[in-house]
Every structure is written in C-alpha cells, then in structure tokens.
Length: 76
Image 1 (spheres, one colour):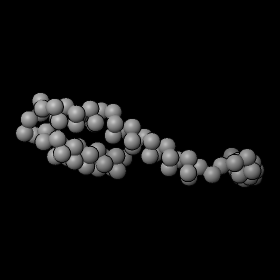
Image 2 (cartoon, one colour; image 1 turned 90 degrees about the vertical axis):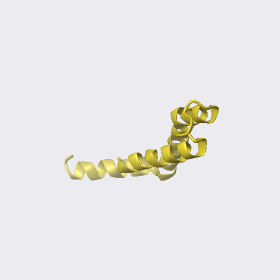
Image 3 (cartoon, helix red, strand yellow; image 1 turned 120 degrees about the horizontal axis):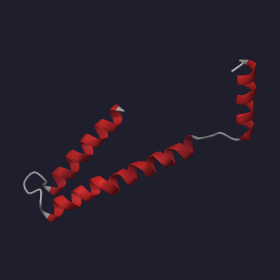
Image 4 (spheres, helix red, strand yellow; image 1 turned 90 degrees about the horizontal axis):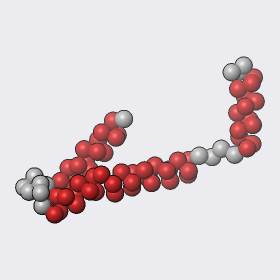
C-alpha cells in the first residue's frame, strides 16, 4: 500500500513538473498530463504488474497436487 502511495506521488510530481501544471493548469500540456494520469500511466503499471505475476506464477498441475496433499496431511 505504501508503495502505491509513493509511486503515485512520484508520478504526479514528475508529470506536473514536465507539463508545468502549476504555472498554467489549463494549458494543452497540462491537459495532456491529466490524461496521462487518468489512463496511460495506470495502464502501464497494470501491464507491468501482470507481467510480473505471470513470470512469478510457477504453479503447474504437479505443484497443485503436491499442495493439496500437504493441506490434506495438515487437515486443512
């Protein structure tokens, strides 16, 4: 959760700095920055998370069966 807040703060700071949002929040660059906040950047984070999940998910039928046997021995 803290990583989420920290990454959001860094992204906001970076985009606002690059688009000069504080000087003119109605400029074309500032509006583009808001669009980045709303769609492009969250999409990239989601894509990165999905790739990490698929790389780290190593379950196959053999491992699943071994886990089921272990849980059965633990009476869970």
